[in-house]
Length: 525
Picture (tube, one colour):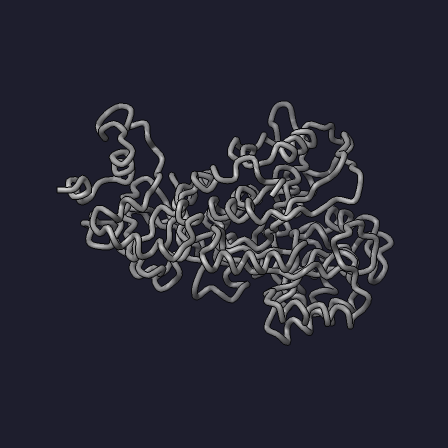
């Protein structure tokens, strides 16, 4: 009789891993300290030695080693389901996954293992949909000779993070990510292809083309500056033909250039978002833009001296500070956005990183150890240096963040579609995956309930992408893109940080192994 056949037919995940690793018996004190839900393909071998191999062989070896569960059939039993629709979590449920899809959700029962099936006992855990991140990046912004006053020697450079960023996203529960602006679109497209083929680990990518930037004063040398509407149209056509699936208008684009880009993108069934300055939110809505980034922070409508097609000196700060929720100006803008079906993407982690450090309340707590460990030494040093530098006494950062939060809530109350994404480029310690969790927590700080915040981070993004029938919520027939975490983020949103396994298309990935693979890398490659 083989060693495998002598194992019990159903035991907890932790027990099975302990048996494989020669750890103490489940009843021993040392075993009871093992609280983590680490998983292994070994689970499936108890009932069918071939079932796991058949699924895992479709993945490259460098992906295979991060896979925890890969049998064709998986049962998540006795788990709390947070379905992503904004409704309360449902306790003690079983979720059946077959062929990468959710095929049944039923009241929790003990299920015996069968051939080719993994059964996970998830008492004390919650399952939510995979995060659909709508403002993500695959690069890190390096700032040479960063000074105590926040200045640096230009130009800043976008360093591609094709190795670390996809792993960080997937490890932290992001199963679909829109790259809201690309510094290396050919690289991003090849990376998307490699992920879909199973050659490297990462989320499904919605690749945005290169920034559609105008001819204004932008010191970033990696952005092409449009020369007019024809250039805008040709740029969209060129990259659409090469596979990008969305576009982003940037700060100095003109109204004519934006109109040409939007028309060409819409002709091809693609969407355009924008981080604006020269064009106001209301102007962009009338042109037909689909989405606006950074909440209400980039609107320049009320800025003093604002000229058509020109970025204002304030860059939107004045408008934010003088457009109170409920005011005629705010009501008029929100009504325009909602009537034109313009979505807003909330990107608050970067703003929160600029809050002053208070000696008693510490508005900007130090990053979690896992975040610091993922950062390259140079990126970690830059974060710590920037965090600890003195902030101006008259800083409006706290009030500005609160105003943006209040406007976002007013937008949703009026029927607007709010999306979520952290804009993770390393500044302020805002990095992929971890930033998505922080963004969801900040939505709760803004006044949304935890389940509302989870919906914004999951189903709303799927709706914007037109993929709500496949992803974004936990429902029968949808892709098994799921996040398993210890605790209950529907009542304590901080539990969204306790991710232990992430399912993408029914394959479960081990968070700790993915994070271990990128320790000290983000900020270098």
